[in-house]
Image 1 (spheres, rainbow, N blue to C red):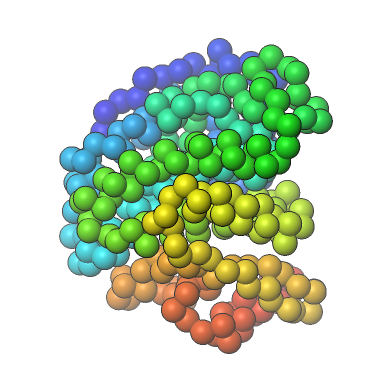
Image 2 (cartoon, rainbow, N blue to C red; image 1 turned 135 degrees about the vertical axis):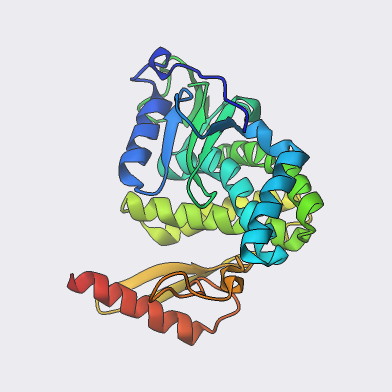
Length: 290
């Protein structure tokens, strides 16, 4: 892995609107972190490295040999490739309606132990905000007139995933419905996840995700498979979850790596809704009783 050029985070204004949003996301999300200014340290790489076919092929082969399943490997690599884009531009928008204006060339990421994206960074603190945002008019901000303009602008950034999917398709043979379906699934799941973290209405968040997916599908005809909402009634009320449009193929690992591990995700599209509702309801009741 090539060393990433370090952009000193201390040169980024600590009070910049995008840095403030990044700090709040990082504080709330225990699985991922967001940075303005590219941090020092091992594991960071430019997002552009993902366009290197040799890099992607080696990654795919490592996973395929470890698991013994090429379809699983293709899905695993595509998930991280898509995350590199959705986390960088989608997360700040779904969190606080703030869109990083950094180019794809100015973004970086860090992979965790299981080759999942655990951190993203942008070297540019410029950000687009809605008219009425407290940060509107501050240095480095561009004002958008409406949420429609925000969704359109986000889609322009998300289209950077196209060349990455071309690479994954080339090295793994994974089909276009699965690749673009992964993009739609991550957009919707990100909108719901940020709504949960920020304690906001999840149905409204779901509609935000659909607004983005609709616009992306209008630009990319290969995006045909979409997730669907899945509300769960339990003793505490209703909780909105989703069913993925595409299967992550986690079950193809073949065996659990630890006691109690479920090989099928609760969002799995190939399992029944009755199975899904039972597990989600038990999960919600269990968390409430702790």
